[in-house]
Image 1 (spheres, rainbow, N blue to C red):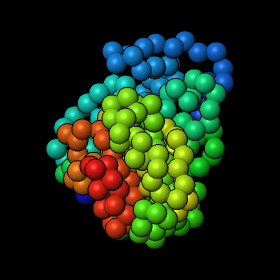
Image 2 (cartoon, helix red, strand yellow; image 1 turned 45 degrees about the horizontal axis):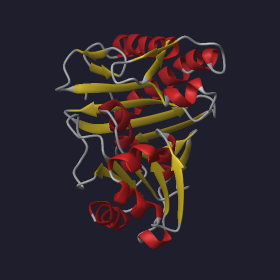
Image 3 (cartoon, one colour; image 1 turned 135 degrees about the horizontal axis):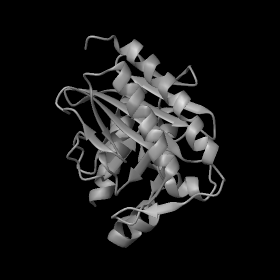
Image 4 (spheres, rainbow, N blue to C red; image 1 turned 180 degrees about the horizontal axis):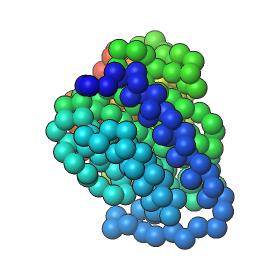
Amino acid sequence: MNTPLEEIGTIAEKISREASAIPMAHFRAALDIDAKADDSPVTVADRKTEAYIRDALQSAFPDHGIFGEEYGISGSLDGETWIIDPIDGTRSFITGSPLFGMLLGFLAEGCPKLGLVRMPALDETFVGLAGSGATLNGAAIHCRQTRTLSEAMIYLNEGERLAGMNPELFGRLCRSGHTRRMAYDCYPHALVAAGQIDAVVDCGLEPYDYLPLVGLIEAAGGVITDWQGRDLTLDSDGKVVTAATPELLQEMLELING
């Protein structure tokens, strides 16, 4: 990398802060909602936010590739690459829930180096930098040290999807851990990084949903893989598990694969 990672992180945080004004200008306001090919909703706020982020990144890093949810790929993804999800949780956004996020990830030769989760309506920004740790609004954060499933506080993302695709697994997950909550989108993963909960089981994700999480979770001392324990890449199948410790991850994987 020609630019130090700390400087890249500072620029990313600034861009995300400025971009967050766009969804907030539309939050809990009348919106026209379109449906994508997969029937997921998209709004003018999604498109405007990503356009702003892409323009800012291209100005700051003209040689970097970009992969965003709304406008696809620009440049090459083989070198230094940005991953963008302008509004992670559009269903939350359009229903007035503040639990929608903005995701930025930075990869160098396919390896996540930075993960940023901004929660515009909560005024919370989680940033992880490889080798430098993770922060929440500038204060250092770290994953909990929970190593056993019986003691773990677990969030199940996309519960109805999980139940529909594998009722037996859903039942096992609902009986596991110390505490369970149903949830959606990026915020539960950020809560693992912040040491608030211990694990998240997720599915149906795209690369722009999970790759920005990798840099954050790993910088906070946690682990995030697919359901087989493999590293997440652009080609992963979208089934994701996040855990505070390797030992807890192993128990989660054994539970998932039954």
